[in-house]
Length: 473
Image 1 (cartoon, rainbow, N blue to C red):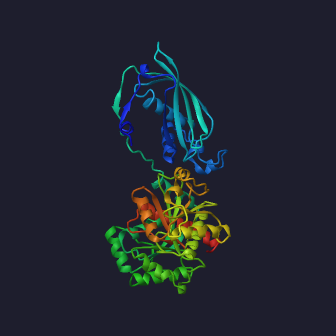
Image 2: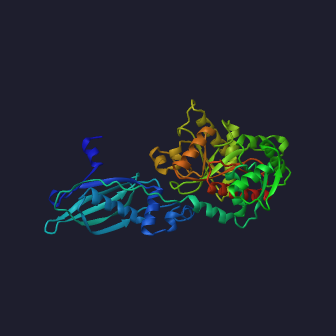
Image 3: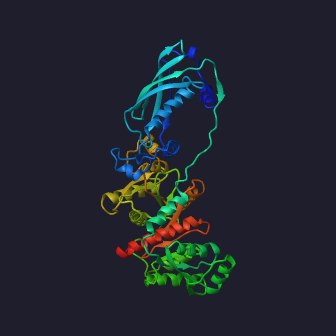
């Protein structure tokens, strides 16, 4: 980077009126992100659903979320206040014409050009124009400013990092409201022999999501409840000697129809799934069992599904096909009629030395041939161009999925588990975990999961259990 350019990143400099000539120009570039729209809506109070509601925006004349018109106007102000004339500039007037919508991922170049000077009043007139990455003009106008008469150099101010909590409790509350009309589902809670798992079962009961049947050693349950101050009055208990027996008994109850869902307690995932998978349990379907996270993060405009990060360690092509089918079924259950499914790999091109890219291409061809239905598939896609329209545009990817994925299918369990936990712990993602491909939904949460995550997982299990009554898996 040239020294002057590096300095410009740290220092704001202006141009005085006497230093400005007709024809002088300055420009900045900016890519529209979800955060830009959210922050502008928060600041302005303009929550027009064309800008903040993806479902509504999809049915509008623009067929998707667009920026507020004055967001482009604010960028013109940024050029005038930081580049030309720069610090010390006083806005006097501004005209604007909005010529084309600005969409998520659009990269705008905002340019101002000096067209007139008034020495008597130090007024400067500037033509203002913004165009996108396709050189389509999106806004133009004219600004008149009072230019500074003294040189100003100031360090750039470091702005605070602002995040909007569009996940968290609000997402859980909307999910609970959605399933509230449905009756609670009788659920075998498998070996909830620690305070977090036992309290989670009781909280899900209190939220009207499940009717818990605790499958565990009664003495251990009562000891845990006493220590944690939890009341087991009125709660059904299946007394079994240990965790292995708890898993086997719960699977048998689900297989015989005594319960409509399973919920993992304090035993290991492998121990529970070892009881579910055998054919003798009566819980297998024609599909392979797989796990889905339903996630919502402040950096993405809609909830999305991440699969498989918990059950299938290194799935082959046919197993990945079932993983995709299960995720599409879950997407339908939560209200996404035609989910956009991104098959992830490290790169977005097919490479014979990278098996994940070959599987991705094959899965997309299977969808083309009707072997996978109910969703729109594309892959291989790298993570950035699966979730960022800007990244997809930069790489020249034209796809109905890129930048708008509803489902992210990872190559294997390790990559999926790493990605899920990065999103949770560094990306403030809210999450719910559910296992599909069995005759009943299985709530599969970690002992480190939050109360909100456990409740959300039970809400999705309730939704699926009612769906399975009408359309068994």
